[in-house]
Image 1 (cartoon, helix red, strand yellow):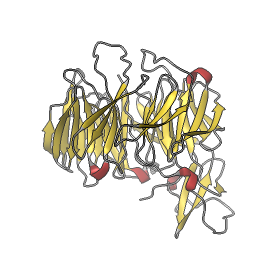
Image 2 (cartoon, rainbow, N blue to C red):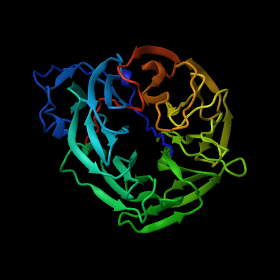
Image 3 (spheres, rainbow, N blue to C red):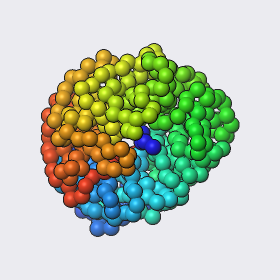
Length: 419
């Protein structure tokens, strides 16, 4: 089992500064906050000079919340079992996969529009009362202003407006795939949905459903379908064991792998402002695990797939994208490589961690990379540390030791999306 990575272009967090407007003497009212139902967060709200991005770092036993600028601990939220975290899409919350549900966590950083500018607030992070039942909670996808959650155990899909994830009264659209499987779904602005096709034994392709959930098109030419990324122009890419499927409108096109036989692209990283999608590339089906040293760059404009050889292997938590489309790959030699996605050229290398070896058990902690704006955050379980790297310059900004051994890393910009 593996995991997908998907990034939309986030806001440049370093550039957020509150405009000249007199500060409030109290936090925003519930009716004006970006996520109104959480405006009265425990501990009160404090107005800040600028946005306060925060990170959610899972560990065995909970989630450590860290200030993304200082890398200092803000809070600790306990959790049970194997925990996973994904941005909820509103700039303030993350969805925690815990047990048989998705649980919404408030990271306590948000903004409120005020005319031609915004006000920024922080409060104590907390668990909210928003829960979505999901046996075997899986992928969380944010696209076209909607957040879609997939329950592998039942095939149930839940969709909600990204800016209303914390509103308990917000309408939720639901759909159930014909058979449960480790899948993913994407809802588009017109109400249509892309959903993987499969069952507990195999996954074969992708279906396009209209707003009434009638099948418009389907392709079964994607064995082992896994991973999803939305690129420029609303194009969505799904990984296969012999190439990728590219969905544009109601057309599904198979782009074969450039090498024959088993050639799996199962994890992709994309931005909705760039045409080229970054993917992994594995060619040894029997390896457990395979330690690939090539990545794929899929040009959704032409269908061309460029393979790039790297000097070190990487894991499924090694792929990310920068604000300006840069392709990031964290190698097992400890180097974060920043590539030009158009040419595949490595433009910068930054020492992020010591050399490491990927564990054969995919659930064991390993170094991971996550981006917010122009900053890449890299965790190192062996030293319980995290480092912030400026992507455009390839320089280290800050490094700090965490309280717990980090597993997954996610985060929010602290700038809200409202609807």
